[in-house]
Amino acid sequence: MLNKEIRLASRPTGMPTPDNFNTVDEDMPQLNDAEVLVRTRYISVDPYLRGRMREGRSYVPPFEVGQVIISGVVGEVVESRAPEFAQGDIVTGMLGWRLYNAASVPELRKVDPRLASVTTALGVLGMPGLTAYFGLLDIGKPKEGETVLVSGAAGAVGMTVCQIAKIKGCRAVGIAGSDEKNQYLTAELGIDAAVNYKSPEMSRALKEACPKGIDVYFDNVGGEVSDAVWPLLNHGARIVICGQISLYNLDKPDVGPRPQRYLLVNSAMMQGFIIRDYAARFAEGVTNLAQWLVTGKLKYAETVVEGFENTPKAFIGLFSGENLGKQLVKVT
Ligand code: NDP
Image (cartoon, rainbow, N blue to C red):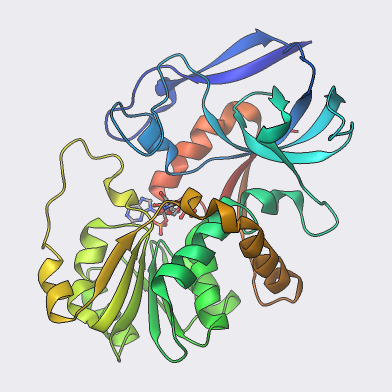
């Protein structure tokens, strides 16, 4: 039996392309004691991986050229040399873009397939869901009746933020890149309004959608979208810097209207965060998200690309908005 893995072939300049990746045949991994062999079922592709393809200091080391890409994976244990895991267990962990990974016990967490679809371990009950939960509740601190504006609203993190804002009794307004996505946000998820940032009327539409101004801005996107938000901030606004996807493929710094004056005159607070800061509280987050999920208060969407070899394509598609909700690759 042969294994396959997808490596970084070269560092992208600008938008990543399929040439930045190569798929290589490999021998099957040999298990050591206390390791398990995991057959990949689903791979999560995530915008932050673009940052790891760039050289330089960040909160995680960059991938080396020639190295296998690593991201969230859900798989099935097909062989175990660790008493903690049995053949047939469904597990998740940060593993290689491979058909099979050898993994040690601390790298893996069991997934309960009876609770929800196993794919949710990579989405609403996994890293994106936790990012939405802690970013909004711990930093945004939304209060009933306030207006919460979310950019990247139709993605995995964004749609979860919008719905938690509704659960907390807020007016939830989303910004996304197509009318179809916005229709989904308002009609299916029940958020109060949604604005298409590709419309030339975006600034006016934002003002109309937020007639009482903005108390919490959950920013996944940055750039010109956020520039349109600053003039609408209310006194005491909280700005959660979760992501800046509009900047990830730029080679030069992006300079727009600087937000400091708006923070100053509104006594507003802007804070960035990385979800692993909250690792000690993940169990609390998953418990609450799962509770909302099973009681129907929280919905999720997934876009699933079929085929291991299409993983780079699915990743690249994140930067042109091809996904509604969590972008996954179905491997087996
Ligand atoms: P998404 O599911 O939101 O996918 C990315 C979406 O971003 C696309 O669907 C697209 O939607 C939008 N987008 C792409 N390019 C642009 C652009 N140039 N301008 C505006 N929107 C764009 O991904 P995630 O939910 O996984 O991640 C959302 C954000 O959260 C990212 O910025 C990510 O880096 C960040 N993040 C941060 C974490 C943290 O710890 N701080 C953890 C996890 C994610 P559209 O059609 O609307 O353009």
